Image 1 (cartoon, rainbow, N blue to C red):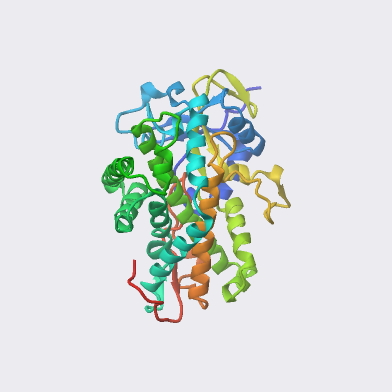
Image 2: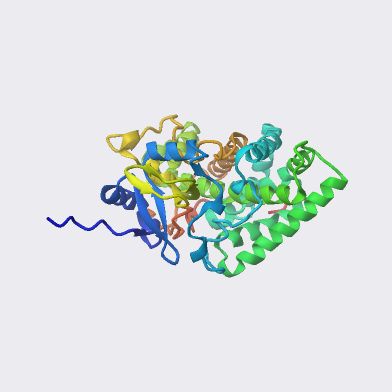
Length: 411
C-alpha cells in the first residue's frame, strides 16, 4: 500500500496570520504535529516549533539549539536583498547572535543597567508622556489609540531612560515606527536610530549621567562601542513595538469583552488580568527567529538536520492543549507563557518589568482620563498588522466625551 504523501510545508505568510492565527496554529499542529515545516520568503525552509514542551526543550538547550546564525545551512540560498535579513542576521555583532560566555556577560551588563532604573521615576515618566498624548486629543472626542497613543508612548519613555534628550523623542518615535512598518522608510529609520545612538554614546563617554547608556559604558566587561550601540538598538526596538502592541491589544480586549467592563468605570484590578490574558491569547511577539541545530537531532518526532533553522512559535506554544484546560489558558496570575521567551536568551527580567510598568501605566492613564471611552468601529472590523512575527492592531479608533487638557504643551 502506497503511503500517503506528507503534508506540504506551510508558507509563513498570508492573511490568516492577520485574521485568525490561533486557528492556523491549531491546523498546523493537527496536520504536522508539534514541529511543523514552514517556508519563509523565497521558499526558504525552516521548522516552526508549536509544542510547549518542544519549545521549552529548544530554548533550554543553547548548545544543541544554538543562537549562532552562522550555523545556518541555507546561507548559500539567501539573496543579498532577502527581506528577512534584518531579522535573521548574518555576522551581526548584537547580543541576539552572541553565544556562550560572551552572551552571558553581555546579558548581565544589560540586566544590571536596566535593573538600576528607579521604578517610581519610570512610572512618573510614563504618566507624564501618557498625559501629554491624551492632552493632544482629549478635546476632540475621538482618537486612534494606536496611531495617536500606543505607537508613540514606549519609545518616548525608553529614550529618556537611556539618556536621550527629551526633544529627541519625536524623531526616535518616527524612526522606530518606520523600521517596523515603513518598508521604503525602514532603512532611513534604522540609519537615524544608529546615528543617534552613536552620538549618545560619544556624549556619555565625555559626560556620564544617571542613565542606562552611562551604566553600560561603565561596565568592566570590555565591550566595544559597536557592541553597546548594537545592543542598545536591539533593546530600543524590542522594548518599543511589543510594548506598544501590548497596550493596544489589552485596550482592545478591555473595550470588547464584558468581563473587563468594570475596569472602564473606575476599577483597576482587571487591568493586570487583561494584560496577562493578552500574553497568553494574543501575544505581541507571535514567532521569533530563531535557533539553529548544531548537529542532527530529533525534535517532536521530526528529523532536524545540522544547520536547520528553528522558529520559536511563542503563540503556538501558548495555545498548546497540554497547557490549557477546556481550551482556556491558565491565565489568572499564571505567567508560564512563552511571551517573553525562555532560557538564557529570553527577554531580561528587568526589561520585562519595565515593559509591564509602561504598558500598565499607559492603559491606566487612558481609563482615568477618558472614563466613558468606547470603540468607534465594530470590534470585528479592527485591522491587524499582516505579520507572522508581531501581532498588533494597526488602528484602535475610539470615541468619548470631550474633556479639557490637564495643561502644558502636547507631545
